[in-house]
Image 1 (cartoon, rainbow, N blue to C red):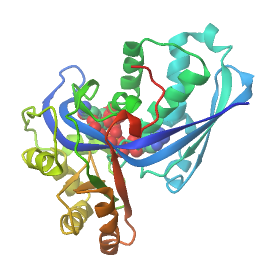
Image 2 (image 1 turned 120 degrees about the vertical axis):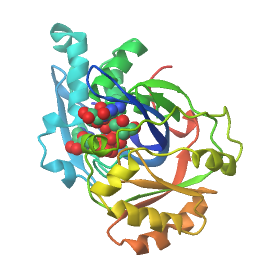
Image 3 (image 1 turned 90 degrees about the vertical axis):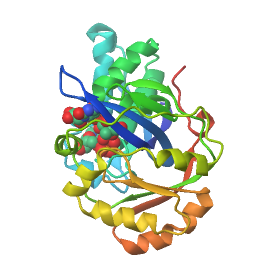
Length: 309
Ligand SMILES: C[C@](O)(CO)[C@H](O)COP(=O)(O)OP(=O)(O)OC[C@H]1O[C@@H](n2ccc(N)nc2=O)[C@H](O)[C@@H]1O
Ligand SMILES: Nc1ncnc2c1ncn2[C@@H]1O[C@H](COP(=O)(O)OP(=O)(O)OP(=O)(O)O)[C@@H](O)[C@H]1O
């Protein structure tokens, strides 16, 4: 019996422009810069004795109750297993070992930091390894996109520019040293509801450099960009405004903004230590808030993934 582990890091949208809309299915076309924070869920996998590639899921951790009531067949981790079995076909799937996955759910659910997507991507990485599957990268990316628009970027967990509906990935500018704080007020926000509620205007694609040498350079550029979902999310969940106020007035905060479709907001600081130093002040503004401070993953060396390039 082998035991494997993967971290599923939080995805943060430093900016998010809605640039258009896809005719076929109404999905929105995006231009976004996704980065990954040290905050993460953890997946532990053990192989079982049976065969057929069944994925049994047990959920623990701070936010497990948010998923506990749901039928695990809907969980993106179980769906990742199903999509891989479907890809290789029924006959080949029959000989796959069954697995038991424990999800330690430490990221808030439906919160704009792609926790479910990161879990799905981590499950794909684990299952590819334990089932010894060698899928072409393009096939894997297509499967990931079927699981969710955020899943492709979560496969590598490297900072990337996301375009298309999120599945067209290109390298991000080189990131400067900095620290990050994440705050979630505890209210789940539905991604489709936020997309539906936004004003029907589009923002052009951003112009990005190849490198940001300093945080000041990055903040100067980010200040000219927006999260086009922030206004709609604030209307649905007004406590986001309180969170943003607390972040903006925190000592050392250089920029504060909402991530994804909310409600989680992030703030950038000069260093992880500067972010951690401001944590208590922000927590005071909302005792029930989830507040995390630390590092941004700045290169692939900061995350452990097992997907070949
Ligand atoms: C807002 C972001 O978090 C930015 O990174 C993502 O675009 C959302 O990614 P996700 O949660 O993986 O989204 P999905 O599960 O694929 O889609 C949820 C719903 O959001 C809307 N949706 C999502 C992505 C997109 N580019 N356009 C959309 O309109 C659709 O109504 C869709 O039914
Ligand atoms: N493993 C999982 N973790 C979190 N949510 C999951 C998981 N599996 C299924 N879901 C469902 O997916 C939905 C979105 O969850 P998630 O936490 O990824 O949202 P999000 O942070 O808003 O994502 P995004 O930033 O990609 O929009 C939730 O409503 C939840 O019920």
